Image (cartoon, rainbow, N blue to C red; front, side, top):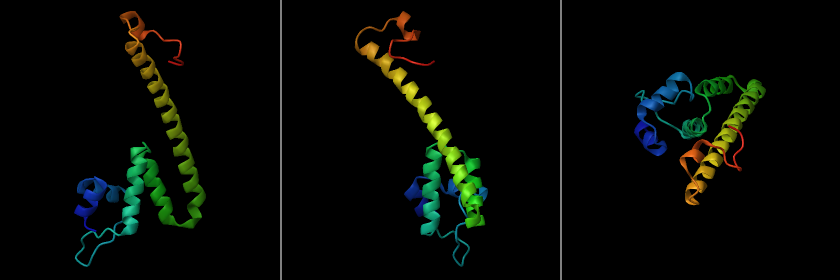
Length: 132
């Protein structure tokens, strides 16, 4: 696939795809005999994985490290797993924080919908709200 086709398929600009390759976020993309990038199934799988991980908020540095370890071969499987476990823990923490925020928003919205919201209530915690 050409860079334009991949760009359209994954909703990433050609500049972003080149950047991902340049910084090591995806392994080097195969090139045709003219030197033009020719994205194969494996390249597309890497792009899809990185897009998913970035959407989840996984740090670019961690993903670059993961790709570098992957390229070193099977001897790095434990290190790769450890890196992914650490990123999962960070994501779970962020998700819990977001859930608390969502719960608080829902409490405030419910007060408005019940006609119970006043200026004094806005910053005050309701019975259902926990944490800060």
